[in-house]
Image 1 (cartoon, rainbow, N blue to C red):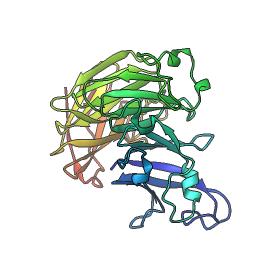
Image 2 (cartoon, rainbow, N blue to C red):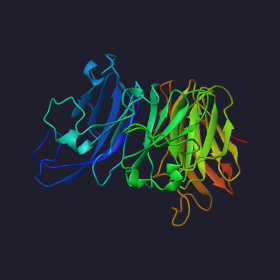
Image 3 (cartoon, rainbow, N blue to C red):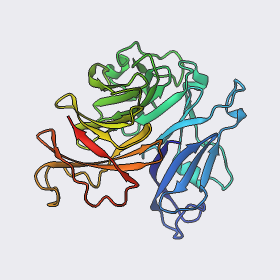
Image 4 (cartoon, rainbow, N blue to C red):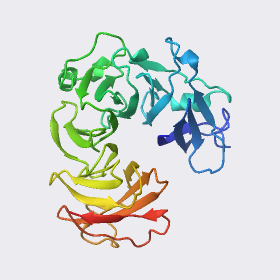
Length: 344
């Protein structure tokens, strides 16, 4: 089940998830979807039931089929419409995390919901991933589909300039309300995951055909990419300086791709099954000015990965001149397992 950590704000008098004080406070929540429900839990409290749950029942669809949540994304936005939920029938719902937290205990509906691609009228294949454009201030988002397509949505057409309105490498789609305003036909297989570069100018996709593709965003041209050692790619993540992309997939490997060199610089061997999630650690990644002295001159990155072998692995990589200079595996005893990285 995909998981997201979100920060919400709530006052002390409205719900069980709030602080005991009467003033507003920032609290971290963990969002995860399982079966027909999207659950919201306190991020730093273990062994507790969700504070809120959204259940998608047969009444969620006019077609009679029961759509269920397959992915979600959260980003704090000025208008508080900040929670995206992708459904199995291709639709994308937009709601408010604050509204869900402030609702009476027992409410199981997604409040203030706006429907995009309703009933899958543009693309009825399963929504596999959703995400916010980093530089749009919560106005533009993207949805990936099992059909192999990416669709661009905007809360308001006024947020789109002429380049975006031209349709991301394809004709704009504006025939129906809340339909996508552009699309990228990525591949003939499912798009399993995608990730924006930190500056929002590039978009990387992980697909069933095993190819990492990097596109310019929002104009859409393909820039670069690579093919996996074997099988499909399931997950993708950018480093926080935008220089590297980590992927995982059905070859059981974690790959680190250099944008500058346009090649894989590290293959990580350690998982015994498919790699389903990867992420760069923003705290233990030291690049540029002001890096801690424990690392020294080279840039240092820590990557986490989770596999279907039930292992969570941490990878420490030191890079000098865009090439891995070695590995630092000290201090990683908290990891469930450690992988072995092989430079190319």
